[in-house]
Image (cartoon, rainbow, N blue to C red; front, side, top):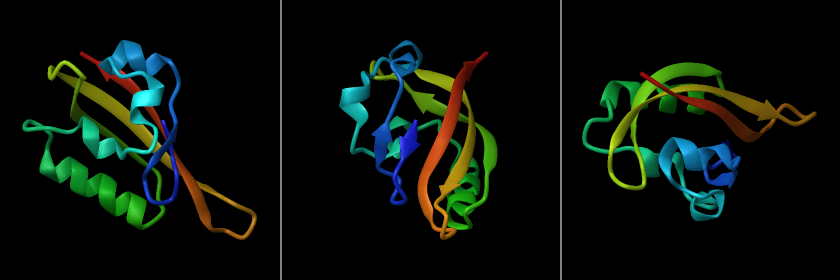
Length: 99
């Protein structure tokens, strides 16, 4: 998943369908927070939010939710993408469902 600096999704691969049931077209323009729910750890989301605010890479395991409402564990490795002026232009997150 790739977001803009405001964390709106601008790109997702078709692999996302297999992981959570959403087509890329359904999530473009939305924020990754849409995948969170009741069992998503507040501390983990705080760690991610602080890393993003500080323009730092991060790696976390989080409980996310599929389109059908079922929960799954998701490993996320996120990194800021900088332009030549040193400004963040995107964030990229590599995600994988884990057992």
